[in-house]
Length: 135
Image (cartoon, rainbow, N blue to C red; front, side):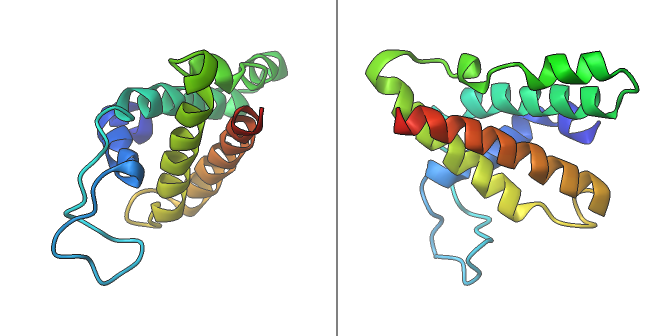
């Protein structure tokens, strides 16, 4: 529920992956509070995070048909570009999802089971998008 409510802010956070590092540099590899987000990536990540929420909600419902339908939604359809620019958009989206996946804090951001579920869905999306990169 928190991810759905804070989608744009979470997308902005994840867009730091391809943004500008902060100055002065942070000492910790996974923490850079002064990093600037890549504004062009924010809408892409916001859309993909909505897909994550859709999949998480459908997988937690008792109906297997709704879960199957959400899993069948192709992440590539959520990329805004076509043609030659698509692999680059997919690569940036993968970087943003990896950035988020690696920085989710337990218990600061969410419970341990919620973090596992989020990371699982991020990894599934990353795998789908990496297929776009390689094609």
